[in-house]
Amino acid sequence: MSIDPLLGERLQAALHCRHPKLWLHLLRALAKGKPVAKASIALALDIPLRDIETALMEFKDTVFDDDGNIIACGLSLIPTPHRFSVDGHNLFTWCALDALMYPVALQRMALVESRCPVTEVPVRLTVTPTGVTALTPVETVVSLVIPADQAGCCNVRNAFCSQVHFLSAPEAADKWRSTHPEATILSVEEVWRLGRAIAQRRLDKKDKIAG
Image (cartoon, rainbow, N blue to C red; front, side):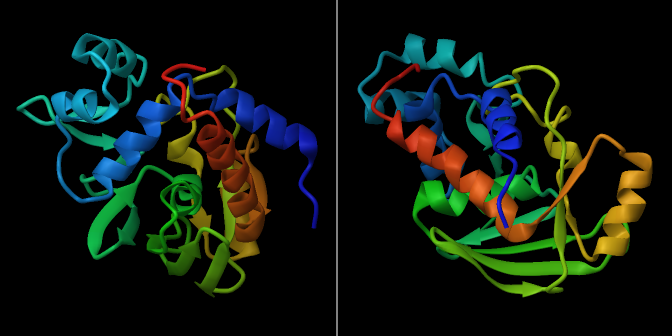
């Protein structure tokens, strides 16, 4: 099944990332299951701390702990409805798209567990850099809402992530859309492919601090 190219273009535009190198490093660092210090990012990327702090100001949904360390930026140490287990670390993501996209960026397999917001049925799947396996229920679909404005890769928690869910069956998707008519319903495989395209675009630009 082919995805409407316009949908993919709109999603890419809305989730643009001006700092793909920083985003990828932060994603990989959070995937280790511990808070990430800004100074450690500056050291690892050989970029002045003030430049890292300036760039992070554009990631407005980023969550910090009391010591100023990063604990959530798409990938989260704080519980959300979307559990994301990678390399033995029990983490979380802000939305279903993140859970499908991050294994591509990390080049790691992840075990994902969520819960349908309509039926409360658990949804489980294995996501790899090359696809999705072991999906249950097999009829699960994903709700997708494109932000009206360009929000950036880590500034979409309310405008986007809060409406991007795993829905356990087409009937659940119909009920969800009755109160969210702006949503598009896609298969899990289709959303994985959209996520792969977004991740690959950022990986292709990772040698830039901005782009």
